[in-house]
Amino acid sequence: MAREWGAGHPYNKYQSMGMQPAGTQHAVEVAAGERFEFGKNWGLFLTLLNEQRIDAAAQSLTAMVGPVGGKRFLDAGSGSGLFSLAARRMGARVHSFDFDPDSVACTNELRRRYFPGDAEWTVEAGSVLDARFLSTLGTYDVVYSWGVLHHTGQMWRALDLIAERVAGGGSLYIAIYNDQGRMSRRWTGVKRAYNRLPPALRFLLLWPSFLYLYWRPLLKDLLFLRPGHTFRTYDEGGRGMTVWRDLVDWVGGYPFEVAKPEEILDFLRAREFQLERMQTTNDMGCNIFVFRKH
Picture 1 (cartoon, rainbow, N blue to C red):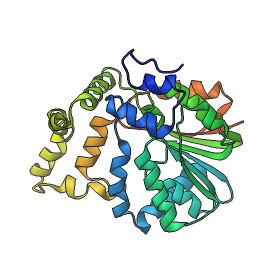
Picture 2: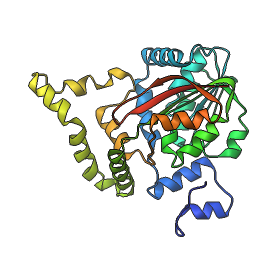
Picture 3: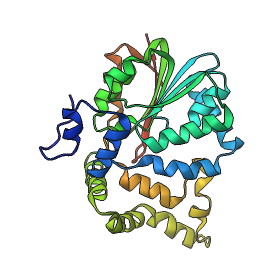
C-alpha cells in the first residue's frame, strides 16, 4: 500500500506530475521532516576506509552466505558501498542502488577508486519501494539489504519486493531492527521529533539521548580508572564512525520500523524461503537473517 500524504504535503506535487525519481523523492521527504539523511555520514567513512575494513567485510559476507565469486550480487540500499566493493573483489557481478543520493555518490566513489570503468559493477539511484524499478533488475544469486528495509516507511512491502529479486536457490541476507515493544515506540517518537525540529534545536534530543545510552559505559570507565576508554576504542568494529556520528544516526534514523524474529520468519516462509542462519539480539540492535529461496 502506498504511503498516504496529507493534502498539503509537497510530495503530492510530484505524484500528480507522475515524477517520482529517487533523488527528488528523497529531497522532498527530508524537507518535510519525514526522512533522515543517512548518506551524509558515509563521506566520513570513505576517509577512513582501508584494506583491513574491506577484508573484514569480505570475511563477514563469506561467513553468512558463502563464497560469492561468479555470482550475481544485488546490494539493495548500498550505503557506503563497502559490501558491494567486498563482493566485487571476491568476483561477484554487482548491482548497487540506494535511495539516498549521498549514498549513491559514496558507492560510486568506491567503484571509481577500486574498479574504474568496470562493466561488472553497476551503481544507480533507486528505491526498494519502486516495484517498476526493481522489475528491471532481474534476479540475483545473493540479495543483500543490511539495515535498510526498516528505514523505508513501508518495511513489509519493501521486504516483499526485495524477496522477489532472489533467484531460485539464491540467498537473501537482511538485518531488521528488533521489536522491543514500548521502548521501540518511544524511540520512534524521538526519531520523528528529531527530524521535524530545526537543525539548530536538535541538540535538545541528542544530548539527553547520549546520556541515556552511554551513562553506564561512562561510569564503568571511571570506576576502572580508564576515563574515555569506551570512546577511544569505539571504532574497533570497523564501521568508520565516531560515537557522535553513530548517535546522530541512531537518534535521527527515521522512518523507523521493527519486527520480531518470528514475524520475519513467518513472512518469508510464506514466500518459499527457508531460514539458513539467524543472529538475534535482546537490545535495540538488528536481528540478522540469511534465507535461501526454494
